[in-house]
Image (cartoon, rainbow, N blue to C red):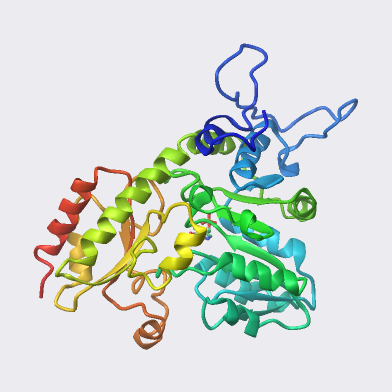
Length: 384
Ligand SMILES: *Cc1c(COP(=O)(O)O)cnc(C)c1O
């Protein structure tokens, strides 16, 4: 089947699937084996070689969704990110990273890179010129994350790709928040797209996985590092991820429409100071988002007015769960000031626009009126 001409939901449902030649079953059989023949075979299979039938099935599906030549799946988003970075960076190299970046990625850089003699710079903003400012003669990679966490800022993907190409620098994106349904960065010139598949690709808050998609040539380089680091995905979880992605398109459509509805509702609400959602025309980067995204996603943040207590609000909720993770079918919410950004001082948080009343909302696929009713329930009784 040539995947180029298939629609995105057909790719989600079918691409990559393993044919059950033994019984003709409708879905990919699960092959849990760690032992495959090595004589008289074209491919030597082994889980840590990232080439078992179930690993290949889901990796091929993700590659097709990302419009990439090839893909690989990992045991977590961080396994995918660390393996990919270490595959292309050596002692003496330099990387430029967006300043609004996932906390785990930030920790990987600041805790491990010095020891390995890899230099890094974080930008002072997420505009193309902020990346340009930090380029050095030894810069090998520019690494972006858009939409960002938790303020949903948007980086001009094509602009960064063009800048990097002109200087012979490689580009990587953490595409987790958008999912390949809402954003296909390789089409815009990015070299490598990375996912925490624990989020939208898995989508049911029950599996940990990661994914990378790129050219055959780049994936060979990543594979050579990956087999040494050993961050592969277990075959049963690979099967669950394949199963999850069958509904990725329909899930993300619903996340998009629910989030847009709720963003518009909150935007004119008397209890709300500000809403951050790239689908709102008032969003600081709406024009770029409109140009490069196919949908605006299920993540939004909002700040309650100072006469509301965000902690009480969160505790009053019945349907929306306070939770560290995101992108599941169920709605979850968190206070960045107490969680992801809890180690910063209140002053440092204000500097980057994260007030104590800011809530990051992962909008689920429930009926939107039930979500709205829960927000109203939370607001009642959280007024000072
Ligand atoms: C969760 C997340 C990661 C890390 O993924 P894990 O599966 O937890 O290792 C990386 N980037 C983003 C944007 C994430 O949300």
